[in-house]
Image (cartoon, rainbow, N blue to C red; front, top):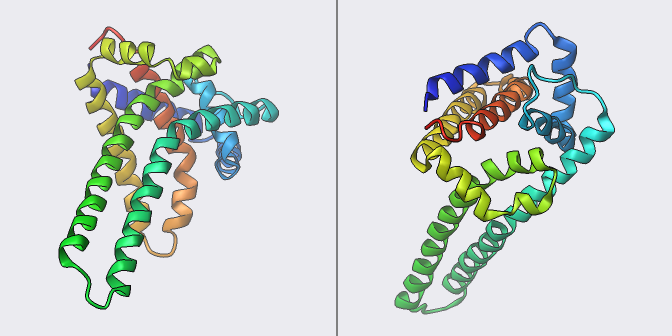
Length: 221
């Protein structure tokens, strides 16, 4: 798999779609604020729209975005449950430590160990779900079927055809690129937050195109 080509293509896709098209950029900034709209717009990119489409048919974009949000929310349920369990356990540990006049160090250490183990499990589950969702989103956009968004057999088979190592490395590369840009914006005083908002459409286009190309790289790894 040519990772550089995927990165370059995704960057050019976002640049050609936004640079010089300032009204489109502004409309997509608004879409990012009204979150379902940008998710609906990304659905069009997942379906293979080239070049990037104009943000129109706002009602359709909103409905598509709600559908994609529901898919993401369902995938997030295990993470949310684990987070509640871990936070609850951490809260209990803190309460016991503060309330007991002579706390049992062994029991407290055991509880803290359980919290740490829960955090590790939470991290692993979040990573696994993230790997699945990257394909599930595109699959859902292409098929329009909720059941296909959770067709784990087909999803894992598709990832296998891409190549699990190539797939993971590609997602790590995307995460690093987006993460570095977001961190740089965060570190810029005063205007950093504003810059993050301005760049959000560019990052959304880049990420959506990247996942689309990764999905379509099946059999080329």
